[in-house]
Amino acid sequence: MGGEQLYDILVIGGGINGCGIARDAAGRGFSVVLAEMNDLASGTSSWSTKLIHGGLRYLEYYEFRLVREALMEREVLWSNAPHIIWPMRFVLPHHKGLRPAWLLRLGLFLYDHIGGRRKLPPTRTLNMRRDKAGAPLKPLFSRAFEYSDCWVNDARFVVLNARDAADRGAVVRTRTKVARARREDGQWTAELEDRVSGAVETVKARLIVNAAGPWVDEVLATALGRNSVDNVRLVQGSHIVIRKKFDDPRAYFFQNRDGRIIFAIPYEDDFTLIGTTDHDFEGDPGDVTITDPEIDYLCEAASEYFVEPVRREDIVWTYSGVRPLFDDGASKAQEATRDYVLKSEGGDGEAPLLNIFGGKITTYRRLSEAMLEKIEGFLGRKGAPWTERAPLPGGNFPADGYEAEVARLSADFSFLDKTHARRLVRLYGTDARTILGKAKSREDLGQWFGADLFECEVRHLMGREWARTAEDVLWRRTKRGLRLSKAEAATLDKYMRSAGGDASTAAAE
Ligand SMILES: Cc1cc2nc3c(=O)[nH]c(=O)nc-3n(C[C@H](O)[C@H](O)[C@H](O)COP(=O)(O)OP(=O)(O)OC[C@H]3O[C@@H](n4cnc5c(N)ncnc54)[C@H](O)[C@@H]3O)c2cc1C
Image (cartoon, rainbow, N blue to C red):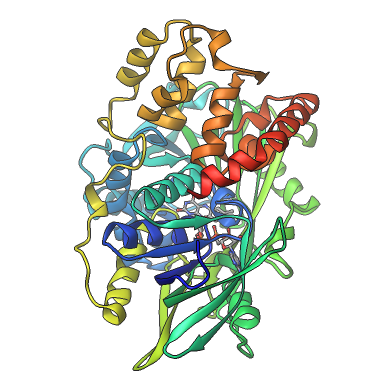
């Protein structure tokens, strides 16, 4: 990439919003460069509850616009990425003293009817004394409501958007920080700092999109030299992962006495994911970690419901993220709006800057379209909206075709374990074949790193998905970190370091 090159758009941030915008813009014919200071999805976008959901809870705050848009996106996103997104049923137990049954029914009626639901099954009522869902719970409930939303592998969602953006011509630079940007002759001149080598490179762009998530204000203050920026409210949310507490594909939606809610979700076959918390955060979002009171809160809240208590020693992994919520002046963190706000400045000879405040993973595609409309207002129109019916890489099979895809892969690569085949299709969809190539036996998959992780997959992640470190592979591109020992992870790290040169050049192509 030459320093003199002029791009239409410089996107700051490789989370779901930055990658979604880069993809949409590249597909419309704009020239795009995206800079991400760490790994793709290393910010908020891989620390979510991983739901493509309308947000039943937001109805209580009258966020009808957001809920409707989000509900409508569920089936759109599922059909564009059926490998990493799938329907999930949620069991919401009801007992007296919490929200009344009529209110839950009304909320779920709206949920079923305002959001263009076609394929997802509607709400039903469960008898908790008879339904299997009642078995792992204390006998507090006679009734529950069961409703639909979708699950998403959030980190892969980001990477697949970046892949598609790159396949359509965008330049994606990871470990590259936008250190400074200034306006010059109606354009932006930006300094991109390579965080591995320290090298600084200058690029020019006609417009900047600031999609830095929880760092959006910091980018305004430090890279763009603004005084007193205070647009987002940073709200920490943490999750714990424990060995699985129940054997059912459904998730639980528990109401707590304090009015908050937590989810307990089947996770990575053998685990249960429990979260989340909601409290204001100060400091660098990159340093966020779960606090002791959060661990206690999540263990206690879940133990109120499960027969078998959730104890600290059950926890195998935790993660925390910071929501970059638009500061609407709400008094409690959980009441701050989850909707997104786009603000533009510049034009009339001054290079435009477009900032994103807030947003959900669920609404990233609609946010990107709204952003493209603004971009076209400044740069002129190049192409029509196109992402509504456009599969992400590997997602070119029917929404309900996962099992058939697994069966095809297992038939063509008969040496694969069933669980391995299932995992590969879940992560890579039809691209699983590209990873396996001409392999005829396990030996052909290359070096074995532990669990079912082999060299051919790691090489794919390095060459096509910008993975540079073992952490990128183990905790974002895959969740093999839950299965590999420390020694195995160290071997992977060593392997990736020695292959690193190849990885960075291949990934930047
Ligand atoms: C606990 C929790 C649970 C959630 N659950 C859900 C859910 O279930 N469903 C849902 O739809 N949403 C959920 N969300 C919300 C969702 O995760 C976020 O809204 C979304 O991920 C924000 O994406 P983003 O791209 O704006 O920000 P990020 O993912 O944070 O991306 C911003 C990126 O910008 C980069 N960056 C910053 N400064 C610079 C710079 N100077 N140069 C280059 N790069 C830079 C950062 O490294 C970062 O990767 C949840 C959020 C949290 C915290």
